[in-house]
Image (cartoon, rainbow, N blue to C red; front, side, top):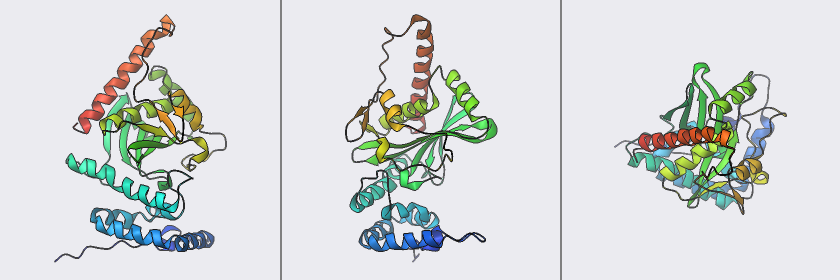
Length: 289
């Protein structure tokens, strides 16, 4: 009889090993204290993971995926119980959907939605960045240079999906790339392309509501290390047609009435909508729905 490996709450050194002369002793201390304070939730999380054996290798290989339980996950307002419930829900809902479609889990293989425009590929995968902001990501890649240009992290929240991160690039030449990308996408800026892609994915996954995290409750991403690059989530979601309540509530359909659009720009908008329609069809085909 095969004995399955068990999941245990990660040891501090698994997250914060010393690197050369640099010590992470204080980070390990904070981790130990937070783990002690949340020991009851941790026991429940260990039980949950070991009941879902497909998650054991993933969580053992990615100790950083566990830490949000004792710190922050998705929303700064969450209690320990809300974090526990949300983490368990999010570790299973998308893998279960993909398994039902006969697709491998995203930690084994990302799903490509192809090139949105020439040289720029949209993918669905598991995060390699900050798991406190969610486990699942849409990523826009510049294929010729194999560079990540934009990402959007999302999660399941109750019966809705939640956008928890929208982040852009800060490498050399990125501003010019974003400018050119906007032009090629018929005036649609990359951050808004990511949001529109998420709207399409939300519908394909069978959800009727898409939410956005309010700026003041967002767990700050470390993907961008720049004091000059600031993401204003409230502006992005407001300009995407959202209404602010407990979260930003985003419409899944775009208002395509062109009556108020200057006549010289209507062709550009039609091409933009055609691009988004095509992307939505590709997402449906790739997820076999």
